[in-house]
Length: 246
Image (tube, rainbow, N blue to C red; front, side, top):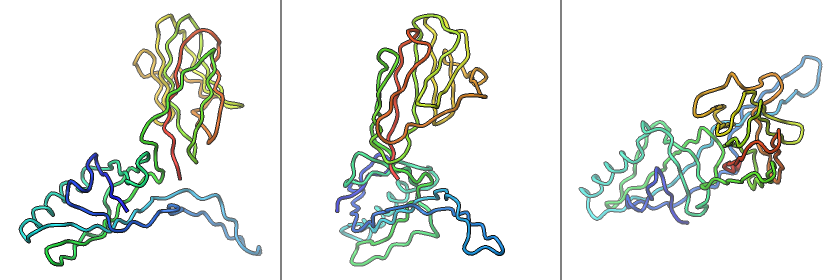
């Protein structure tokens, strides 16, 4: 069934074989249910997504007991949860990754014939899988058509370089827009990251320049979308984003 790569290293480097890994169809949900006296049933609100758990049944190969314990030591360093979340990529879906970390009540291996068998519980605090490669689209004539092939909204990052003076910059998607109010000059740069909520003008944080009352950090829905920049003809720009799947 193939193997997996974690923290940039393939499991085969550690003489580890992935024996079984159930496909995670959906992560857990955090449900909000309201029960009203005198009313049948309940009010069930749209849930939030919880963590996703991936169970990996692994087989560690060795030729001797001493070699087995040496390889256990290498595994401990590789899987050490104190390193924080790392990219987890399965061979069967090489173009996507999860951000995962080991979590559990303890990891024990069953040793049989100088081999080790264990179930590795990997937890993804962010339940989505992400495209390994970012998409980048340049604006042409102050508009750009982007195609989000994922199944969930993608968070765009805009990189703007001004070719003329402008008193503001606005990017529009349908009825939604994000507006930065500032006296831009030729050569100024603007970077807007919807994932982190950062707004940088010439590399310096400028959140106070964002029009908080009427604009928002918006996401790109699945499918094709058209983005427009206003005012026209004052800058060159690109948008990049990483598709994600539930």
